[in-house]
Amino acid sequence: MEDHITADEVRQILAAADREALSKEHDALCLADPPDWNYLEVIKRYSHNATVLDMGCGYGEFLKALLPFCKRAIGVDSSVASIEKAITLQCSGRRLPNLLFCQGDARDLFQLESGAFDLILSRHGPFYIEEVDRLLRPGGYLVVQTLGNNNLQELYAALEFPKDKKRSLSSVKEVIQGVKEKSWKIYENNNSQERVPYSIESLLFIMAAALLKRIDLSALAAATNYLLKSGNTRELFTITFSRDLIVAQKPP
Image (tube, rainbow, N blue to C red; front, side):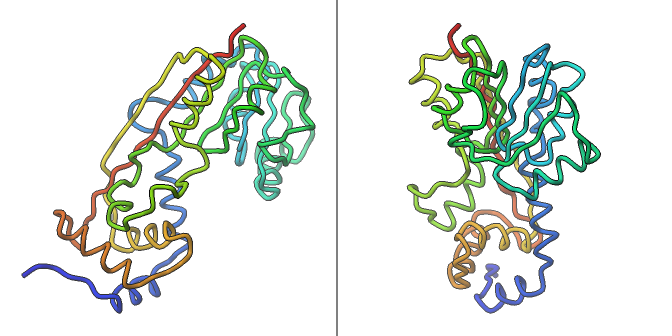
């Protein structure tokens, strides 16, 4: 007999779910390094004696790890809470001469000097080529890790997610198009795809989030039944995780 889930079952599962735990679990999956590369090792290669800017720095752990190699590091994030946490965790609440965190909008970092950076990082964060181009010195490097175009493709297919909806802060297509328009040289362009197991609670939580907070129980039930017909079971759903890594150099 074919397995089938109803809208009422979806409501019950979501009501009983620990949403905070599921959110942390999903964020950890998204932010974990793929099996094909180690992000920290990649950025270390370009950080020696460099002035580094991390756009969307979060809690700043990568910048702290680069301090033994770089000249100076600045982290920018739009979230005041993230900046405050970064200062607490990475600076022990003190001012460090070569590590600075500040709140700002990556589209217009007016407080930062043009051409001041040898290396700009963006890991699952915002990407605006005009501002990156302004801030990066000639000959400097850009390293971007972002979710790939096929990320969660089964979920979007099941939800019939509109193709014109933006799924992440930056996409690999946007990054490549931007650097090509500026005639930058692309040194690395890597893609990693892996199949990740999901519980039905995690699956429904992520699909509900993909609907942009417009919870439609019937749509979630229909999407889940679509996936059940595709070889999944209530105990185990297998979903594609896709990430891209791009390293580009601004012309000297």
